[in-house]
Image 1: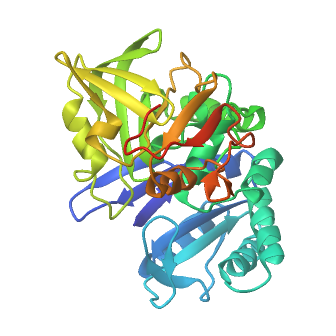
Image 2: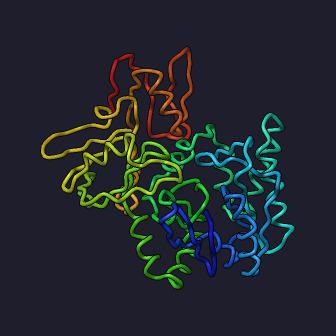
Length: 363
């Protein structure tokens, strides 16, 4: 819930008793001329007029369209049967703000012209300052699942992941778009400009945000994340500490596989990773992610710049279609030939998917 804003900061009311100050990197990008507009979703309806006045006082135009009122759902899901929340479009001029609203309405239409919807999404991305290469990658997506959108950049990346493109801690993220790769030069240039400005305006907060973005991340899906602090020794990560979760509003970070995994990761625990699978050594006992969570596929994202995504060719043996569906949901392109998953040399050219017919998963 937005309750106040000035000079690039965002005052957020997360609960009745908790108020925090976050840096609004999108507003800073607008101030620097790196984007033409901002799209803030899921603002309580009663706060929309207040926010419009705050942006007007800062010299911007803020516009909310009554056709974009909904019941806020999880992530980007909107329930248009309700009218409790809305979207605020911010720009230097009203024409751009209203254009963003019209385009957003076009993307919400279902059952219409898919090509027109894709064009509207692309124009929104351009107005929000997203690089052309990243917009092209988004257009070519084969799944709209959030895990697939998040993991596709990982599958494309062959060099070290750049911490400036880590958007998994919401308050510390420098970019609001999903990059085509986690080493995308255009996205890095955009993020670097915003980081340079925030380091001048808010040096202490910016330094802490950089530390959080540099934490290795264990990823199952968009709601199941584990951030850790630790040191790498070749391909082994020795954990020093667990970073408190930063869940999306309305989500409980104390339940689910990620919460259970955090319970196994005490200081001194060792994590080794292979494609779609992690191993945890705790006090001489080894646990694999598939032992702990059958039919799940965990990925390690190393934002320290030490490790790179797995490059050698490996084989993931899918024991059943449930796991195959999970892999597909996480961004892997899986094609079936005569009922069997065929080897994939598209998005993830380093991994071959093979049907084993066995009752377990081996990597």
